[in-house]
Structure formats: C-alpha cells, structure tokens
Length: 356
Image 1 (tube, helix red, strand yellow):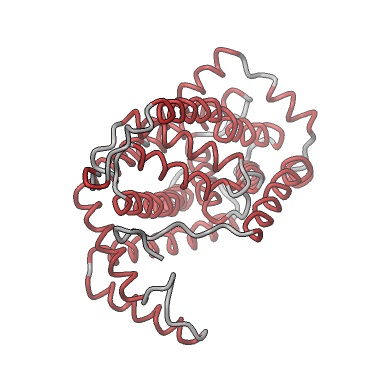
Image 2 (tube, one colour):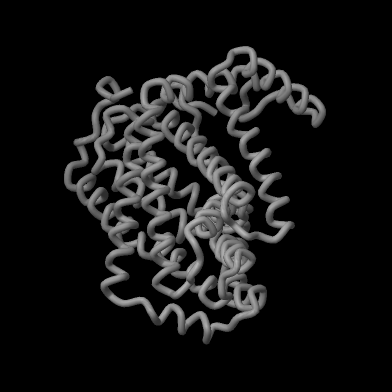
C-alpha cells in the first residue's frame, strides 16, 4: 500500500506480532536471569560485587557519554531528512529508542512515533518514509561493517584469541565486507540494481508470488534505490560522521563500564567484543537484542581472557545504560512533544506547505 503522496504505508501489526514480541521479552529475561550466570560459569553474587563498584560520579560520566552518543546520531537523522533540526532529531531518536527497548512491538512503535513527530513538524510522508528507509539501511550496514573492523583487529592485531574465534572472525570479515559492498553497489549502479531486481523476481516466482508489498519487485527496488541514492548524495557525509561519532562515544561508554567493574582487558579485546555486540543487535530475536547481546558479549570477553564475573557485569552495565537510562530522556522528549502538539494543534503545516 502507498500513501497519498506515494510513500509506502506502515505495515499493520497483528496478534502474531504481539505474541512474537512478548515471547522475545520472556526469552531476554530468562537469558539474563538464568543464562548469563550458567553459560559463563559465574554467579549473581559475583556479578553484583562487580556492579557494586559503580559510584555516582562514574554513573554520571557514563550518562553524559550516552547523551553525547544520542546527540551525535542527530546528524544521521538530519542528513536523511533535510530541514530537521538537531533538537528535533534528538527528541525523535530518544523516543524511538525508548519504545524499541521497552515495549512489545517496540521497534514498530518507535518508528510510528518517530513518523508522527516528523509529520507534526511539517514533513511530507514521502520524505519521512525515505528517511526511515535510509536510516534503517544505514544502521544495519554500520552494524555489519563494525564487526569487519573487529575481525581485522582479531586476525591482524595484538589479540591472543582461540583458533575457533579467529576462524569465525575471518568468516565474519568476508561476509560483512561482501554485504556492505553489495549494498553500496546496489545504490550506485543501475546494472547491479536491475540484476538484483531480476533475482528477486525469480525467487518470488519459485514460491508462487509476483509482488512485494503489492508492488512489482522491479518497481519497488528501483524506487527505493533512487530514494536512498538521492539522500546518500546530499546527506551521506554528515550521516557517516554522525554514525561514526555515535559508535565512538558509545564504545567510550563500553570501555568505561569495563574499567569501572574491574574488567582489565586491553583496548583491542574490548573493540572486538563491542563490534561483536553490534552485530548481535542485528541478528538477535529479542527486543533490541536484549539478553542475547549480553550473553554473547560477555562470552566473547571471557574467550578473550576476561574474568566471567567482570565480563558479565560489563555487559549488564552497558545494557542498563543502552536500554534503561535512555528511558528518562525518551519519556521527557515524548511528553514535551505531546504537550507542544496538544497545546498547539494547528501548528502542523497544511499539506501544501509540507517540507519534502
């Protein structure tokens, strides 16, 4: 389905979506409560002792790093949606992240809230859907590219890792680089885009379908490619800088969390574990990767020589900031937007004045 101005409408949520999301929350809870100490051969007593080392001053510093990372991401949003201010982007990002981390169907709810905020600020539906498409692709590619960096550090850097980890790093580096290259060429090359469309058409034919979201695959891929390519040409540099800044700042938060709880691993090992965590947020089946990322990242830290209790505490402390501390920012931003929208219901621009 398409909107009035040609923008694709958001998919309707079903009871299956709700059941899947609730199941993911249950799985995340079980993984953290029972899986983390069992898989890493530690205990909640040991983890609690390490977390007890956090002091108010260090907690404040970590909160400032989180806020700085959120603000850095505003360049990604403003680059994908020309005319969007940084304060507006910060509000939308905080609200979307809060919904994605806490609510059943949080990812879909976060996108819907972000779209509603953009719409109330006068942006056209097509510009909004393009921004959501581009930032979604940008986030996935960044989280695939980061493990390539981590894998290179593993295989070529000063890291003493088990052989199984090194083999996995080679596989991750090759596959990640391949995916990023294919996505980049798809955006830049008409020939590659046409061949991908033909391949999708053949795959659909094998399962007895001819359309994707009620559109021919050729038209859908071509339309999306043109929209992505236009945004990348005009806003690609600030988006790249904003995404890089966010990951650098959030890695600073991860490094600080490790030092606070007493995980004494070199910088290279922490880089590898952090990039692995970002990959898990893409492939995980729980909301925001919660539970899966904590067990997976703590396991990687242990494989690289970290103490199980300190590794678990590091993963949990970072998750607390990434999933919980962000909530007050998101709630405050949502309340501020809602009150502003309710007090000035006529402030949204008329369709003829919407920004493209």
